[in-house]
Image 1 (cartoon, rainbow, N blue to C red):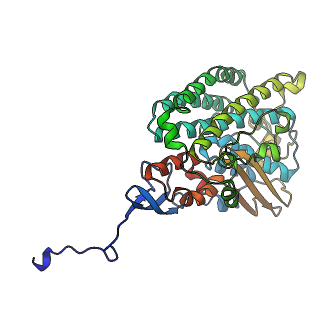
Image 2 (image 1 turned 90 degrees about the vertical axis):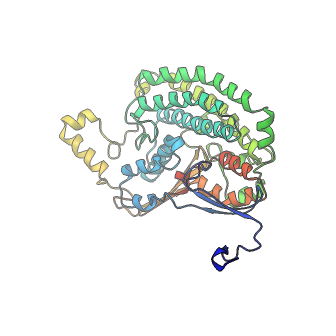
Image 3 (image 1 turned 135 degrees about the vertical axis):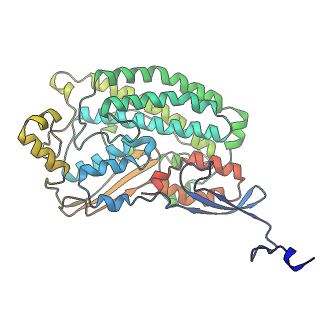
Length: 408
């Protein structure tokens, strides 16, 4: 054989019995822009290396150059499947720093919005787990109800996905009758669709065998990593921020904390499924409580804090004082007290925290977002090691890894 016919193999490849697979950052099986470099022995994963940073947007450093109100739009783009929870969490953080107490009706309105967001977040996750197991129909069927929730958002704030919803102290406007009409329709129609999705997947033999016993993590390992939310509760730990550190008057509601046992893909699916039913119950309770308000209380939708709450738009157009206050609040010209606060909410994926340090300036001195997905992803390598490649894809789905929350 002549010299030029010899094939040169890459250095170090001689004797290599495994295959390197680049799963991401734009592979169709990944649920977001992130990368996993897998070493495969056949179809079994023997090693993995996870990488983030492909959509890093420097949210925290940008926030240190923006007044409080202009940070709300940044929080939208963390977990974009449940943006209103991010918005409410940020406003609660501001209110803790500013010493603002919101009326009960505002709390209940926020609870309705946050639980709707939790349902849509879980709805996406559970239906996508079905897609990755080969059942595409259920996903298409339930998406029409996410669309209905987005119509409710639209009536409340004019936006759908990245909502920029609410204000420090409450909401920018009272909920219209159209909001309540669409909410009643959702509460009436969606439970039937949810039952059908569960009937399609829960006891389906193929789905059960693909998810049961795969992607497991123990409670101890989950706690060591810092897991919270449904992925921690699937291991049997009943930690829920809404119960252990109540905010927005969650202590006024009666609901259960669903837990699993094994922390596998099936338990994560089942925990989120049951949480959807708990969220529906909370929404119904909040709706009844809101209907009990009479007289002037029935129209309250924000706290009485004119130095932080944006004036009515009509007043801004017609009154000089309102125009001045609008400018001062949006541009950060109002006095913000120095202080250090941490506020957490139960996001769609777990404890979403905001650590805010103020030196009294117009923007935060330091702001850190505690993003649950960033923490889950650290454990992904350990969870999928030794599993089949196809199991790793379902594990990615059941952990509900959202790239926007990994790269702040």
